[in-house]
Image 1 (cartoon, rainbow, N blue to C red):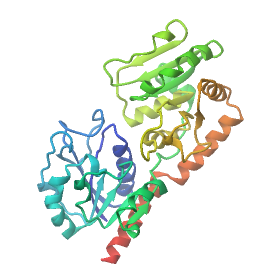
Image 2: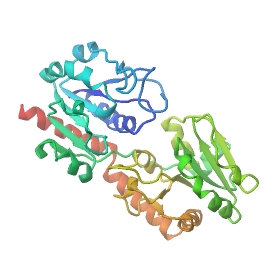
Image 3: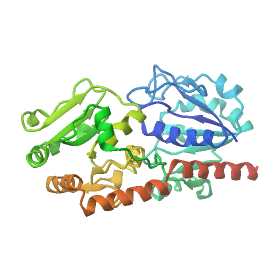
Image 4: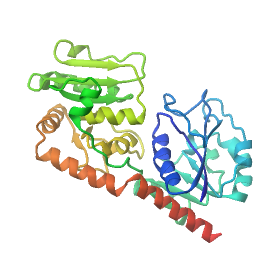
Amino acid sequence: MKIGMMTAWNETSGVSIHAELVGKEWIKNGNKLIVFSFIESDFHGSCLIGTDEDYITRCFGTSIRSNYLNPIPFLKEDYDIFVAQDIGMLPRDKLAKIFPRIKKKAKTVLVVHTNKLIDDPSFYQFEWDALCCFDYRYKNFLKEVYPEEKIHIIPFPCHPWKEGNKEEYRKKLKLPLDKKIIFVFGQKWRQMLDTVPALAEINGRYPTLLLIFSGAQRVYGFDALKGKMEVEIRKEVLEKEKIYEYLYAADTMIFGKHSTEGVVLSSTAHLIMGSGCPIIARDSNFFELMGEEVLKYKNLEEFKERLISVFEQDENYQRCREAAKKYVQRNSSDKVAKAFIQLFKKLKEEG
């Protein structure tokens, strides 16, 4: 199978997480992949990470900034499946001008990342052979405007389950062996500031290190913890492999995002769950389709209970780990990648 994919790649975005998890599995299974991605001066996410592989061509910008697209790579490369990830960020009108040429040589598939129907006509100018979404909630709004037979549910992929030794990685990363470690990265610290009183209280019982990685210029709001617990803030954006090392060293990762408009899920959870590090998450629509896979909290008392559960490794903690492992295995990147390949084969057989 020769696949061309227009997507974020090596970028700090959920789209990039999805694309890389399935794309690398396609290559592993003997398929040819060409990735068309955002230019370095205008990309989707907070920053670029990692080093581009030799199958990456950066040839377009976002729809909201440069709206740039170089058509030549799309026209000259050899592929018989064309996958577009997240039409909302792509330079749609520019893509539409070459879309008929793309359709002449390839079956076209859109992976939907938008959380609702968008009232911009430019979203609907493409005649896709198939649309892929992550669960029934996405399908419910898509079928209002697209033929239902064109909509396919393929779950968001998970990083494969791979545990690490906590003591080994704490030594490697020069982290304390005698403290509980809470790990937070990216922008997630912004929505956990309401937990500061609970963190200060819990530290009196369990000496704790709150370890925050962020590319933000200023991480504010934790002054109340000074003298009450150890907080270490590192202004650094971690690559995915490094994230896993810190997850192995940590006792838990906190996801404090509040519910938001539309249909959403947590791409971060799908990336990190395979580490075995339990997620303590605010009870929001980011996790509405998950049960015991994460430890949810509605208020500060429940937040403290979830922390204690993790620190004590009690029955709730054990159930969470088992449920998370089953979820990861059920939605592993290799299974999701194969589901896409099956769809691609079906589209080609239909002619």
